[in-house]
Image 1 (cartoon, helix red, strand yellow):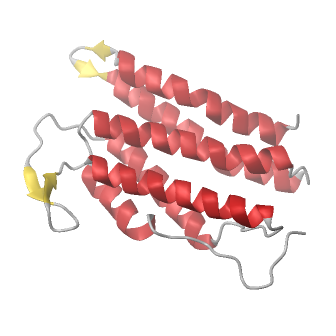
Image 2 (image 1 turned 60 degrees about the horizontal axis):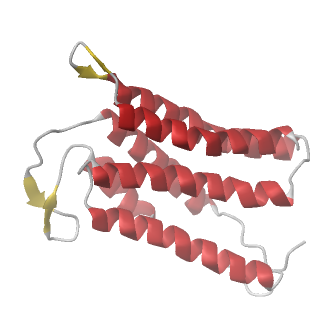
Length: 189
């Protein structure tokens, strides 16, 4: 197993540690530092996304296992964070459902295309969406509100909104429906 794949596996292994930090939620002097520890773990895990790809390309060690594990690790990390934010009432559940649903759709389209010998590589827009999503989720982990005031949601319906919703809603608007389809006639190499 090469170094890039080990880095990707470390991201997968950081997901339960991230969740454990959220669940235990260590308090020190009435400050919930467990959430800050979880946010730091999330940022470390998210940063490995670029590192593993860089290592694989630089060392010319791109593998089928890496192509499978990298998006899986991303989806596990983002899904865990979204579900926690819903559980903690920091974002409305419909938002997480749409973002997670979009991930399933893109993965399904890529699997069908791969079965036909077509590789759908991530575009610059998909990469930008991931960066914005990671930043939004990390910043949401650092902002906590015990009072959930009612306000207009991004679709015009009343939904609980906190300061942590703002980056998530920006991420949702910018990238939740971004899908990358292959150009006609493109084949796997």
